Amino acid sequence: MTAARHGRLPAGWDTELSDEYEWAPLRLPPEVTRLSASTRLSIEAEYRGWEVTRVRLYTDGSRRVLLRRKKSRAERADSTRPDQPDL
Image (cartoon, rainbow, N blue to C red; front, side, top):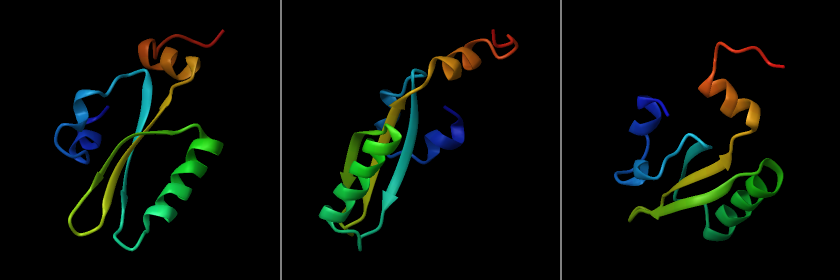
């Protein structure tokens, strides 16, 4: 995870980050209802393999959400051995 990615996370959220997962922090504006947010996140989970790790609701009504999904074997191999060719 790059420093720029860490800077976009709320305090305390970077403690669980591991290299086995891809991480996607999202911000949902106050206009997004709880039902709409739930529907959107369900679609991400169903069709793209993301799961909700954390949700934080702010006093202005906005939400910060942290999604994760397992990296594929190829992505994990590339991150650990970037100079090795694929077999």
